[in-house]
Picture (cartoon, rainbow, N blue to C red):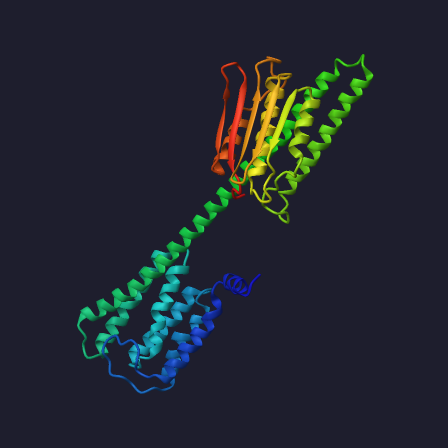
Length: 382
């Protein structure tokens, strides 16, 4: 964590209270030094400083140190000090604490806001009457203008509160959208991993039923089922590691050679697959390699499920600027699906490719076969 980040973290954890005490002390000291430079309501002549002047300054300035935690109490003390300041004619610099305290009340108060505003207005009326009675007789417009200025401070505090609430709501929505997107991503990963491996195991186990008269081939088929199960466990463990908070959040592209392993697994399940890979994967392709792997995985899974035994071709081409994948299955083979499908596999692939700015096409060919063609920009962000 950098020094700036530490400061920002301290600021957030302290609730911006670290500067309240210096503000209160600074205003207290400045008001003692600079006399008769503050707010003047009622037009009373300036009175020389005495002990009550210090009390008025202390009541107005020092409560600002706790305005975050006790906004109403602090404002009540500030108001009492301000009334004493004006009725005695000190007109100290500490009078600026009144709008500051009022902004804090409007910004921090969660309940009884309307009642508080009415009470503050009601408290101002006797103060204005008293000042008018002992003063030289200021026109009523002067008191109205001061009230409008105070009301403006309340409006500023209300705006700050509304803005803060809107920002909190925005962050909540962003967090919720992020969690939803992450759940959807994990669901797609689980679909890809589980569907492919389980489909291969079902196909291999189904074939083993007819090999009881050939022990060697039966042993090979059961070994293939076991190997597929182990790979499924490994992939699931890797995927579940992504849920660990200490684990990196970025998707890890499959290592070099995983495509060939995927093809070999499909071949052992009884699917004839022709595999061609051109070019060399770039050192850094972002999520492109992972999405290309998932395209091949889902396409071979569909071939096993819906066209078992049909000739299938996989062509992957790596270029500097993009990765292209084409998986085709001809019309021969089983007509009955060996397992049911959710219909979300191809839709999930389309979403992944679209997010990376690529092109996705999947559909039947005139001869009855099925082809998936994908173009994925290399170095796409994860």
